[in-house]
Picture 1 (cartoon, rainbow, N blue to C red):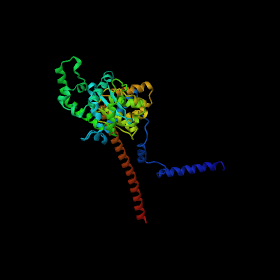
Picture 2: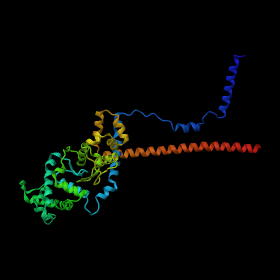
Picture 3: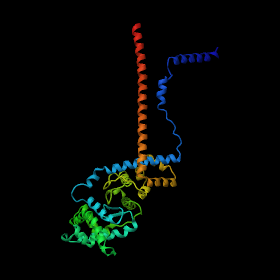
Picture 4: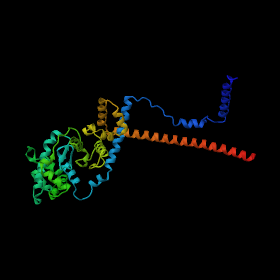
Length: 390
C-alpha cells in the first residue's frame, strides 16, 4: 500500500489540474495569444553590403537635408543680413565678395584673437592674387574721404580700384574692353566698397568693427593659410581653425555666396557638437556639388556623428578603414537628385512604418477592448443569473 500512495496522489493532482484547465485557468484564450503575438520580436534578416550602402546613403541624405534647413532657419543668421546699419557681418560678406572676383568662392572669418582668416577654393591662383587685392584695398582705406572713389566714374579712373577688380591697365589688353568689363562690375563694386571703406571710421574703436579694420591695415594679422584645392572656401577656414585647435570658438563666416547644402550641414554639425559657440554664415542656397569631405569631419568623430546622424554613423563605425573611406566618397559624390530621391524614399518608408505601427496599435487596442468587453459581458451574465436564482 505504501508504494501505491504516491501514485494515487499524483493521479488525483493530475485530475484536479485537468478540471481547472477546462474552466479556463492557466490556459490563454485565442485573443490573448493573438495580442501577445503582436509584440513578438522578429530577428532581422542579414543585410547585404549593397543594401547597407543604400541604407547609409538614405540616412545621410535625410540628415544633410535636415541639418542644412536648420542652419538656414537660425534667427541670428537672418538678423545678420538685414538692416541698414554697418555690422562686422556685413563687412565680412562684402569683403568676401570683393575677393570673389579672383576666385570661384571666397570666405572671410575674424577669430577672437583678432586674426583674419581668408579661405578660397582655388589655391594656386588665389594665393598670389588675394594679397594683391588686399594691398590695393589698404591703400584705398588710407586715402582721404574726399577723394575716395565711391562712384562709377571714379572707380574706372582709380588704379587701386582697378586692381581690386583684377583688371589693371598694364596687361597689354584693349583699354576699351577693360573699361567695359569694369562698368559691368561697377555697381556691385560700389556697393561692396562702400561698406568696407566705412571701416575707416572704426580704426580706433574697441569693437569687432575696430578689430576688423585694424586687421585689414596690418598684413601680419591676416592668416594666409594653405588651402586644399577644390575644397569649399568656408570648409577650408574650418579646417584651418581645427588645425589650430580653435574650431570650438564659433563666429560669423562671411562668404561671397551662400553655403551649399553640404557646407551648411557641416557648419550645423559643428554647432551641435559645440552649442555654446555657434557658427553663422550668410545663408544656404541648398544646391549640391561634388564636395571633398573636409579634414575636421574625418578627424573628429563627434562632429562626424552629428553630420551623418546616428543611423548612418552606426553603419560607418562598424566598417574597416578602407570601406569607411568608400562611404565618405559616397557622401562627397551625393548629388541634389540623389539626396532628393533618398530623402523622399526614407520619408515614404517612415510614413508607411508609422501608419503600420498606428494600425497595429489600434488593432491591439481593439482586441484588448474586445477581450475586456467580453469578460465584462460574461461577468454581467453570471451576475444576472445569480440575481434571478436568488
